[in-house]
Image (cartoon, rainbow, N blue to C red):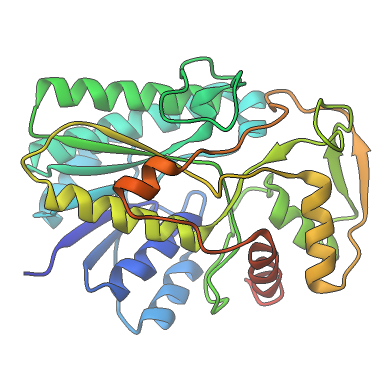
Length: 339
């Protein structure tokens, strides 16, 4: 029987790419997105890509009653994949209360709706920011969490704690935490990609916007970190590799229905790329020069972080296939045709 999956934030960056793959794999998918930080064009792109009409619930997840009503009416569902959240570290430093008021209630409400409707499987979009400034890298799932350097990171730590507590109260409720590092790139078709309503704060789309003439230059936040070239080091993972990881985590949860242990997985490529190296990779792939300038360090940024994804490789049989060059190539292709 075809499994029915609810994807919150389904028209956002990672959500849209995951929906595309879910449909390709034969799942029945319902999106939930109020377009507060996404575009209806993403839904159109998805429908063109998949050849399907995709149902979308235009719901404010911070409204408990609205959330409960919409999900109850659309139920039953076999699983929820919860992406919907504000996601910028820098913006969260400037507007912490906006992040607290959006990211935390939305998790509570979607979790309650899942429990009330008997939805056992809950895949949660977490983040490497839960690790803070880790003393040892690469980070594993056993690296201590709780020392968030940003309000965004704190909302992810809080959400994991809340979902863990729900699991204690309702033993059958089964959350899985996917802690990803720096999602980037776009679908190879260039029909969907990263397109937030807010100004981009992630490195790869900013590089593309600079080269496309939408920005004057890229600010490199600091060149005196204790790294090989002085710039921050991150683990850039292609969005389609992440989508594949979500399918693997979902399928594992569905298969192991009687097992209700909470699982956490790091999702990255397992090696760090510095900001300056990322710029160089873009230039090599596209033949375009990136106009950049060194600026001040940005509050909330750690010097370096990258993943040990060996648990995901072993348990989920997942391994990232795409490189930083693939990320840059697909991101630039998307930038040239995006809405």
